[in-house]
Length: 266
Image 1 (cartoon, rainbow, N blue to C red):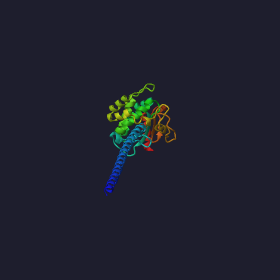
Image 2 (cartoon, helix red, strand yellow):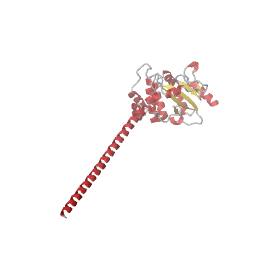
Image 3 (tube, rainbow, N blue to C red):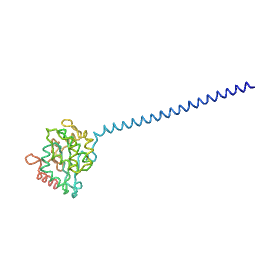
Image 4 (cartoon, helix red, strand yellow):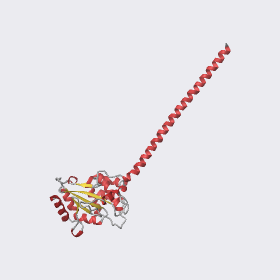
């Protein structure tokens, strides 16, 4: 009898030992699984963060400016400049490169007249900026888009005129980002500084000469009312019809006024 009791105690002790081992093993498995799950979550989170950072970094240079027309233009109307809105303003379309010396001359002779007519509600202008001449063409275009996103069409117009006034030589080195930022500050758009320094629209603007962006290619594929493609800058359309200056020169205020009057009459 005593022998049986001793054997039974040993058997119960062995069974309890095995049960503790099973429980310990189960706890270890649970802890291991939990640790692995936490590690996987951390790795997945880190991977997502890295991917997002890479995607953001890769996506920024090709970002398209917000608020452009379907033809990648900037529409300037009376309400943009604090002027008087009028019914049925004549549509003027202007293709310009900020590096173009002839565009600079056009702005010097006709820029004030255009701004006055916009403010009066007589016309609205869709600016179709392109970059095909030099690296500065693209650098300044990209910077101007930063100004446009911050300050709208009026801010863009002020910035573009400032760039024309200070336009560097085509054969020169252009300007650095600091100068592009300074011009934005001159027209009161300090908020564009970070964008200009970050250059998110640089790929969108292209890499001239030779490597034109889709925006520039589409602009030069545009046709006026007579089916003639844009072949250079400045190109000016009034109500879709190309306007040339007297003797083939750039359009003067009188040339533009005559075209606008004809569009209103027609």
